[in-house]
Length: 185
Image 1 (cartoon, one colour):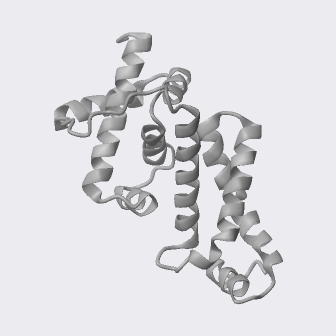
Image 2 (cartoon, rainbow, N blue to C red):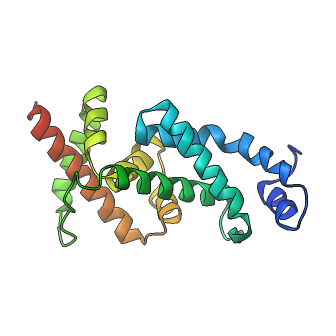
């Protein structure tokens, strides 16, 4: 079983084969999904629940997997969307939307990236809990997962310019909240 590719396992399951082999996919990816969920919730039990929900959704949606991307990318996208939806529901009334017409200069963005990378880890975690779910996820993909713009485009389904703008906005949001909460140190 472990020698089969993800796509081969999906083909077996979707063609009426043994659905129990889905456990192989679960074994391969459950830790990654759980870690992504915990980065959103900071709560182990809740992250386990979210990961369970994600794998249920994936199992029930296997027939929708077309193989246009790797299974891991498809799974990551489902994980991303599920976690963002959860955080949005949890924090529905907490934040006002950011003006979509906001234009950020390149020099200000470079400064925000330097400030963001210099923030103290424990304070940064507090800030990540305060920013919008989309901002948190894009920053985690970029800096924690070290994902490229192309990877983020594939995982989120956004165009290159939208990904770059989302990263700029997320950095600005994080730095602004950090400065409001802790002052400019």
